Length: 430
Ligand code: EPZ
Image (cartoon, rainbow, N blue to C red; front, side):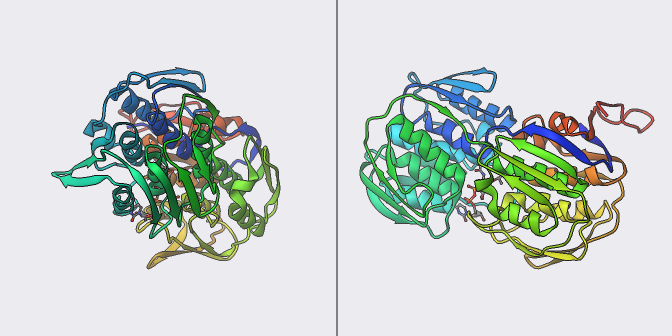
C-alpha cells in the first residue's frame, strides 16, 4: 500500500494555485444529467471523486472527455436511470444523481451512497424532501427505488441545513411543474456555485447564499459552459499546514470570503493574514497560540471539513484548544493517529481538548478519511524526521496533486512504493 514519506520540520514558503472545489464540481456534474446537452466545465480538479462521477455519467450513457482542467460532457443521448452499486458505494456525492435523474426521467434506482466514515450519514432528509415533490420512494433490499411521474412544486423545510439534501432538492426542482420553496437550506459557497451553474443552464432560482431558496420549476434548460469555484477546504488545508510549520505562503485563486471563521481562528493563533477574493497570504513567524474554543457548524460557521487539519496545526500552540464537532456524529478518528506524533489530546464526549506540546516526533500513521489524512500530513510536516502517512487513497479523492504542491512550497514529501525486504521505504521525491 502506498504512503507519503515526509521529512518534517521545515518552514513552508512560496505560492501555489488552488484547484477547483471538489464539493462544488460533484453536484455540478450530476446536474449535467438534468437536461440533455453539451457542457464544458472548467477548473475541474484532477481527483478520483471527479473521475468516479465521470464513470457514473458514462454508465448512464453520457460521453465524458477531459481536456486538461476542462471536462466536456455530452448528456444528449443518456437514457440510464440506474447507477451501478460498485460506483454508488465509493462516494457520498453519488446520491446527488437521484434528484437529477428524477428531474429528467421521472425515475431512478441506486444503492446507498458511500463516503467518509463520519457516523451513520443517513439520507432521510433527501428522501423526505423528494417525497414532498411527488416522488414515491421504496427502500428494498438495500436498493433505493424512486418513481416520480410528475414532480410538483412544494414548500419544504429541512430539519437540518443538509448540504446534500439541499443539492438534491435543487436538482429535482428542475423537473417540477410549479414553484419549490426550500427553507432551512444549506448556505455553503458550493451550493451557491451549483445554483450559478443551474442558472447558466436557464434555471430560475432566487435566494442563493440564504437559507430560503425559491425555484420556478419547468424553466427551459440547455447545455452550458461554467467555471467551478476554488476549493476553500484545500485552501484551508494549506493555511493550516503553514500555520503549523511556520513560513509564508500565498494561495492563488483562493477566495478569502469563503473562509472567514478559519482566517479569524488563524489570526487569533498568531498568524498574519492578508486576503482578497483572488488570493490568501498567511505568514507565521512567531509562536502559535491556542485559541480556546473551536466549534464546527454549518456555513457560515467554522467548517467541519477544516476541524481535523486545524487540530493538527494547533498541536504545538501554547495553551489549550477545545474542538467541538457538531455536524457529524463521529469525526475524531484522527485523534488516536495524531497522538502517535506526541500530541496531547483528550476526548471528552463530542469534544476534543488539545494541549499544546513543545515538539512533535515523526510517526507512521494512517488517514482514515479524506480530512483525517490531510491532518496527518499537516502534523507530519511539523515533526522533525521521517514520517509515513498511509491512507493516501483518501487524499487523492479530494486533493489535486497535494504532494507536488507541498514540494513547491519547500516541503520534503515523496510517495513510498511500499515496504521492501529491509523494511525501509524506497521513497522518491523526498
Ligand atoms: C457535504 O456532505 C460534503 N460532501 C462534506 O464534505 C461536508 O463535510 C458536509 O457537506 C458538511 O459541510 C460533499 O459535498 C460531497 P450534510 P453531506 O448532508 O452532504 C446528517 C469532505 O471532506 N444528515 O450537510 O453528506 C449527516 O449525517 C466531505 O469533503 C442526515 O441526518 O453533508 C451529518 O451528520 C466530508 N440525514 C449532517 O446531517 C440526511 O438525509 C450533515 O450532513 C443528510 C444528512
